[in-house]
Image 1 (cartoon, helix red, strand yellow):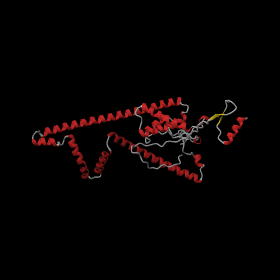
Image 2: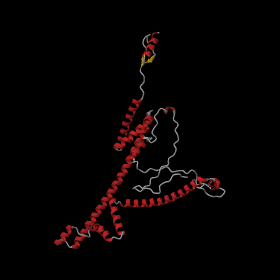
Image 3: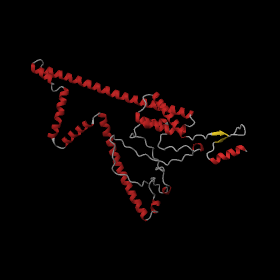
Image 4: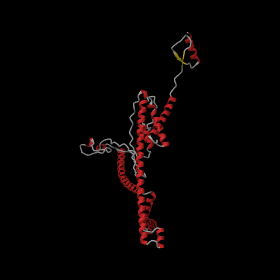
Amino acid sequence: MAGSESSPESTTPVDGSVQAEAVTSTPTPDVTSPAESSTPEADPGAPKSMVEAVHSALQPKDADEDSPPSKPDRDPTKTDPASEKTGETIAPDELNEIERSQLKGKTKRSFERLTTRVGELNAQNEQLQARVTEYDRVVDYIRSTKLKAEEIDTVFDIATTMKSGNPHEALRKLVPIVQQLQRQAGVVLPDDLTEQVRQGYLTEQHARELAMTRSEAAHARAREQYSLQERQEAEKAASYQAHMQSLKTTADDWERQKSGSDLEWSKKAARVHELAKLEIFQNGPPPSPQHAVKMFNDIYDRVTKDLKALMPKPSAVKPMNGGGPSTRSVAEPKTMLEAIQMSTRGST
């Protein structure tokens, strides 16, 4: 039974999408081998592969992500063992009659208040779901019309004025729109044809037919231009998706090769992913798979150099003096006492 209360009002995003709250789960601790115990602990939020680093850099964070489905504690279709005698089905977040009878005092009153509140929240949630569905339907319809924001505002403004019982104000707003439509449809003669009619070069009927022909030709060109623009946008989107998939495949192949050839790749992977993601954020995705490989190699060389600089340098060793040639070598003395002891051992 849920113990937290959600607000009855929710703010729906502008795009009409309802973002689901991700269900978190308790992570299972990993068993670290002795060889990996010296490796710094990786950030749990860091990308785990080059593909994931590239993908997270290319996809905006406000983008929608699928949330893992929640799992109920038990099957609600199964009956509670305590209620098998009565044949009553008990929901997983409810108590049966025996459990209710065992509640006393404040616990019983708290349970009753919470049960009432859960019922209220469920009813409010059903209402909100209905509103969200209706809102999504309106948003999808507006998107399908390709209307701009200012055009939608004009339509709603005129409709609201007409609905409020103010025909004079609604007519004042509609007249400019009607006049513009009349000119576009050829109902009203343009200035040049009006002048030709006045001078007697054209009859009014001939001028109107010519105006209608012009209007239809202009509309045909506009429709063709609109269709061309839609095709170009669709081709551009398809090309972008294909390019992104190519980059992801390139990143996957590159990382697979490095992980197989570099024994220290596990120490470098997290830093390489981080720098690749930062590079894409700053400069955008590489224009080609070849550029992507060069970027990965440059980052890899940089990480390798940094890791090598952090590794401890081996101590210098020098052969012992005196007593003839010797195959043994000792570390260089660090103090005066060690130097005296070494010289004493060498002379004896």
